[in-house]
Image (cartoon, rainbow, N blue to C red; front, side, top):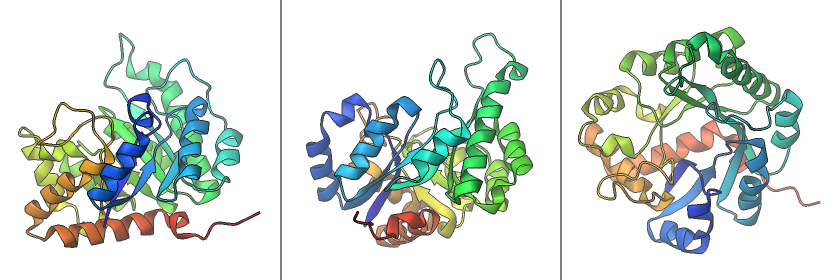
Amino acid sequence: MFVDSHCHLSFPELRARMAEIRAEMAAAQVDRALCICTTIEEFELVHGLALAHDNLWCTVGVHPDSEDVHEPTLDDLLLRAALPRVVGIGETGLDYYRLNGRSVADMAWQRERFRVHIRAARATGLPLVVHTRSAAVDTLAVLQDEGQGAVGGVFHCFTESREVARAALDLGFMVSFSGILTFRNAEDLREVARMVPLDRLLIETDAPYLAPVPHRGKVNTPAWVPHVAQQVASLKGLTLDAVARQTSANFDRLFPRVAEPEVVA
């Protein structure tokens, strides 16, 4: 019924509880989840989860905030993107939230890393999973410059303005909302969610982070993505079932490899 389109089940606090988490997902009717890669070093763990469980898939990419890690080349991404159950490129993007005394000009390495991921997405035809924080103008500019609208993707854990959402939609991207949508002080974001067409919207947890109300402050899990769906349903005057069905269909449309049959060697 529900799909968590963005979670980090490879992180230690979740990986150690995998059997429990999968049972909770089943009880909550969360049928599928996408496990997101944040470093090349982490990829083997993320990919292993996708190979081990028939309702999990994964991406390959290096988070913009990841420093002192292997810097991905185009070949690094292409090699891993060709593996079974890898369905997207990312998460990637730009994050200027913690510059730590640096200027935006000093973040050229992030922008170059982002370009490498976009080129991998275009070469493979796989959707891009975009993280942007305090960097929306540059994120959109790089996407436009690299022609990523030809492939598309999703702006995950969206927290930006209506204008940024509209620009992302105009580029052919989907917009994904997390548990932040349920927070008491997130009225501006709820207005954005009202504006985003349901057929361009995804739901996610970003677990283990950002647990939705009524679980705020706890370690998040994919089993709680229905709370995000319920908030979307309330904002749009729809049933929970309608939101579940449409966001699941959107996930299938954005990540078509999910529906591809497994090739048995």
